[in-house]
Image 1 (cartoon, rainbow, N blue to C red):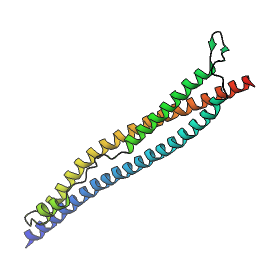
Image 2: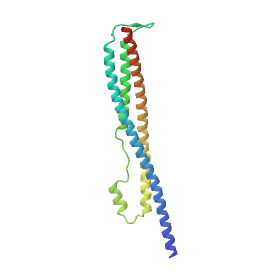
Image 3: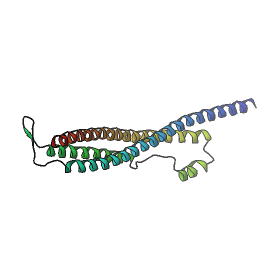
Image 4: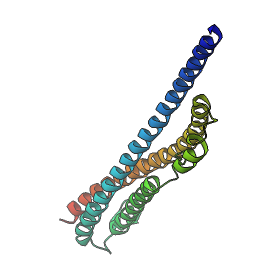
Length: 192
């Protein structure tokens, strides 16, 4: 009788330990999922912001370039055509903003997200099998979830890297846009 009681206590302790391990791993999995959702939100915000910026930039550029002479040169130790400079800055700005858009789209695109165990496989191999103990099932779930976490975190790291580059190219495009506007205002002031 004492032996059975000790055995039951040991089984309850093992089950408690297995549940604790599984809950810790499950919490890490949920954190990785939360990070994925945050990265999705950042990428979608960049996409929206870049779309608005490109629209405004092209509109302002179209209006501004219409008023600038294509042939008149400014003598700054060399003859420089402001129109050519502005077109170059404009194109670099648009290219930079488009790069930001495409990089953010790549970060936002669907990636493989590991979710295991597959429900039918789990039901057939574990839940229906009466020979498997709760501790064994929790151990298997813990191992598969831990493997999934590693793969999912790698995917999140790639997405975070893409978002970082999208932000960098966005900043570069915004700076070029500001330079374009400043030069355009200066050239338009010279032509008045």
